[in-house]
Length: 213
Image (cartoon, rainbow, N blue to C red; front, side, top):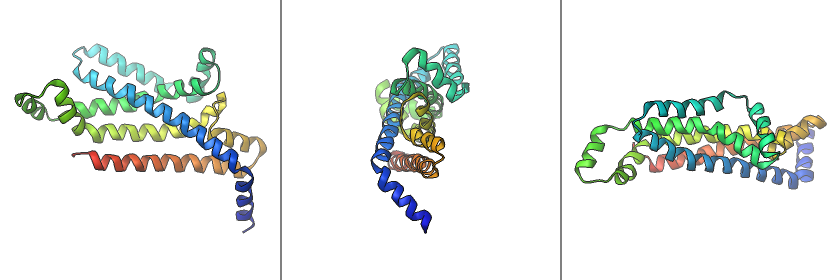
């Protein structure tokens, strides 16, 4: 009971700063997720139309290389180019987000039954019309799977952005480690988990609603 009372008092004392940390975390995470979706999905669609297999391999290999760099190292590499704070954190984690979205979107479009595409051609659909009416709706389960995986990863990895001064819940966890304060560590960790689960749940509902598979 004493533990619960201590924790309630912790929230009463730190509520304002916890809200600030959470807002910073959401801002960094959503910026990365938004940029990833806007950049990667069109790129993957373009790659499905591409005839040059070497170029496809090159793009996948570049995205793969970013995934192999340790997160802390990639964040540190950004400092000489972008300084510290929000921008280098967004750039570094955006590079991590490329591969899952790229592979899933590409696989989703490539997995479409070509007889459906040919039938759409026969019905007079343009390339853009086939993409909007046939290919993207059929590929939604793959695309959403990529978005959901990327989202969970990014929200988790954003805690490391505090190491280069970007703020977020990682600041709360680092402060907790510095002060040996279990309440700070627990709160930062739990909030990051809850945010990831809630957003994954929201994307899951979106997927069920709009998937035609």
